[in-house]
Length: 217
Length: 217
DNA sequence: GCGTGTGAACTGGTTCACAGCG
DNA sequence: CGCTGTGAACCAGTTCACACGC
Image (cartoon, rainbow over all chains, first blue to last red; front, side, top):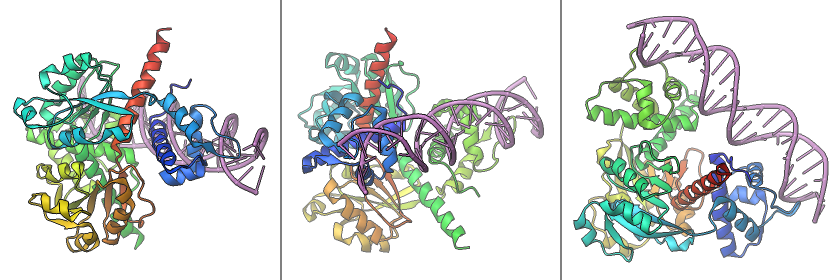
């Protein structure tokens, strides 16, 4: 089994997986690489290459059977069972994520929220259990939480990351603008910095402006 | 002027820009590529290459002067003036972003919010002006809004994208799980699919589990 | 003929290694 | 002597083109 998937491939395959969900909902049973590519804005040959990283699954000349493809991707990408997740930092963004309806996708289950402020914890009304931040290691371990969404203020990011690692967390999405620094090898981190995303978008707009200027010369 | 920056380079340079902000806040005036790399978890030679895409700016043997670097990046990346932005779709995530304190970074200014539900618009109390969705083209044009954060339900994504394009929007961050489909050439789009991010994180965890298993054989 | 699977060619981004300057 | 800047070497991922099965 290939364990050497390029990150870009992993990202695209997960998009394909998500597309399969939608297709099944809509009752579509077969789909070609070209159609997948159109829906996802990816070239068809890239779609085929990507899918083939995980072994043959398509029917020559007839595209892919959606449900088979979906199952296949789920197994290979580790989406075949719901993973338990928590949200660390219940400010605006954290609260929004806490209340998000993750159940629509059965791939995750948010089972806990943490915040440093006891005050805030008492204010929030949620069906999900909330705990003070210092209990992170204990709760993460006890509740077998694998994933964390980190939405704390930047000062609190590194300490929170450390507490999560102590509890044996396996993956963190870091919404913070600081990197978490050295964590145990086994911990996967994805940085998702909203301010940076917005800046990158500005840059893209800016570079395009320049290009347009030059083209008109 | 180089207009051919690889996307990965643009992303990293924006991180460097953000780092400069923090450094100035902290009173740091000089920094080497190695130190930048450590803070951002990027190899030092990559940092140097990236910065050099935009021309020489460092002092041989003595690193970079932070404020000069910051200004340089701002000019080249188009971050030298605040861009006007709006939020489309005021559900949980949209509202959270609406109330986010963007002013901390002077790079953006959220000047409008939109939602299809008049009801919801009347409920939300915000210093930022709110409008019904059908007014998007008019308001975007009138208010000279360049950027949009799209946080609508997936059914509403494509139509909303179209309205934004009509108003002459320049860039969209699409938080939706669907691609916006063909938009005018000049519109930059960045897809930021939270569910997919979480899935990718699961995949990374999964692939690592496999690797660990194999290593123990 | 259509559409998958895949080796081979290509592209471009990353890494290396060192020259050059303060 | 430290650290930048950069051409050259390297490598990874993408694209191409076509063989093969339905």
